[in-house]
Each structure stands twice: as structure tokens, then as C-alpha cells.
Length: 178
Image 1 (spheres, rainbow, N blue to C red):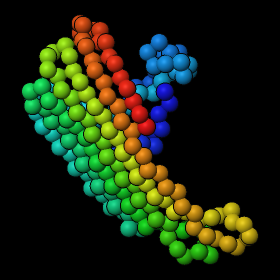
Image 2 (image 1 turned 135 degrees about the horizontal axis):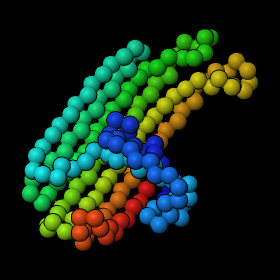
Image 3 (image 1 turned 90 degrees about the horizontal axis):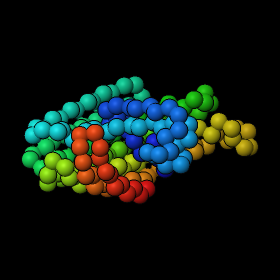
Image 4 (image 1 turned 60 degrees about the vertical axis):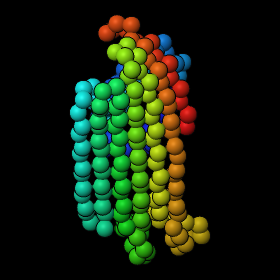
């Protein structure tokens, strides 16, 4: 299946894996030329808790806040990330003094229950909301530099059951909805 990568915040990616060549056996018939696997924040494998906060600010009233966590206690584990990006922006058209605001919010949460070493149940939710305004640089009629808006709101969910036969072999049943 083709995933809309707009639902994944770059800050929540912990690693990327690029598989070249046909990957149809593992990833379905659409994976003819290869696969890019993006891994989000991972659930710790041992009992622990971790947190990370990243705050930044820039010109044009630009603010970015990102928080991620991961925790495991016995058979239960959870990990997630939340980010908020806001900017008042700047107009790219000299005759137009309005700003081009941007707001992007991302949230992801994954939970896992492992009642035995060989069996685990998991669920994953990714939500994104964005609102971007930009100049109508190709206005019709000429001189009508109105603001265009782009909005994206969505939710992506998945669930899995994994049965580990050996350390090298896992039978995994996955379901996904966007």
C-alpha cells in the first residue's frame, strides 16, 4: 500500500530503511522498484522511560515545539510524539504586505502488549492537521493577489499481532486504515 508521508512529522522519524529492487513478497504488489520504510519513535524493549523536548523559534514569528516519549513497564509499552509548528510567514509578492501563515500539528501514539516473549499485540495512531496560506502568484485577473489556502486533516490507524517462532522469524498480521 502507498502511504501518504504527509502524515509523518520529520521530527518523529527515528530511522529510515531503503530497500531497492522488487519487494513484492514482503510489502505487496505495489513495491515493484523498492520500499522506503520510515520508523517512528520506538517502544523501549526493557523497563524504562525516556522523554525528549525540542523547542525552537525563528524569524517571522516562527515557533516549533516537539515532544516525544517512550516507556515500558513489564508487558506494556507505549511511545509517541507530538509537534506543533507555527509561523506568521512573509509574503513573496512585493506589492502585497500580508503574511502567509502556516500551522502544522502532528501526533503519533503506539502501544504494545506482550503477554509472552513470543506474542505481542500493538496499535498505532498518527494524526495530522495543517493549515497553510500562500500568495496567489499566478492570479487571474492580473493584479489580484488573493490568498490561497491549503488544509490537510487526517487520521491513520493500524493494528498488529505478532507471533515470534524464533529470533529470526516472525509471523505478523497487520491491518491499516487511513
